[in-house]
Length: 250
Image 1: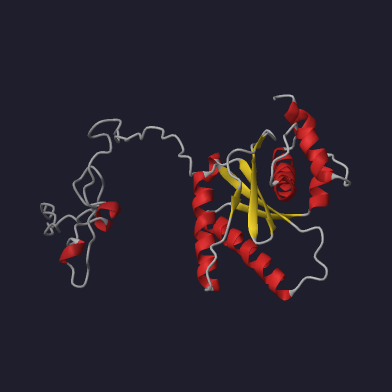
Image 2: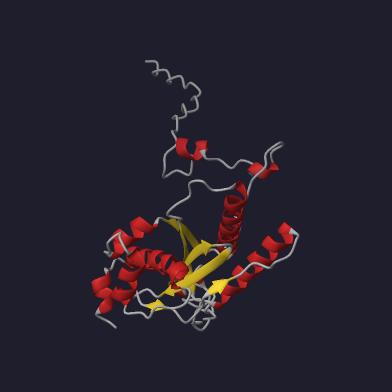
């Protein structure tokens, strides 16, 4: 009996390698790692400019409060030529080429002894006359503590000659220019209006005013009382008082 044949041995094939998939635990890069692989710095790329933030000092460095020295000036009392302390009223009445004056204080008290009149120079040059008269007015206003000038309007101005009208208007203009230069108040006041403010009858105004104020009749009273009347009327209107209120303080 024949022995059984030996089995044919075929050469063994190498085992099929098992596909190995990357995993987080096998050291292979993950998709995230592949996307974030290192790239050259932006400044290394051609045509790319990077602006770096500048270092700013800490705002808390230094003192918490910065003090600035302030130089305080002492309070200076206003001078007498300051318009804010000029409260008196100067009344003016022009008659026969002379300016008759009277001063009234804010309380309505007349200051009849302060100033009486201003007389233009008697020279031929009319322009020099007005220039000198304007100088007199300016110096007088600077010496007085007046803040307002009240010019009395004439009661009668019919049948005037040109020379009379020109002379009066010229002298009034000198007062207007002087008050403007000194930054004072100028008012042209009718005598009847001033009488109504003071509370006096229109008839016999001069004597009624002298009696009301208890003044003695002076030599130039006839030409001076209109100046006192308009000054008193302006003072009462500016300070909102009546003549009876003003008389209580006397």
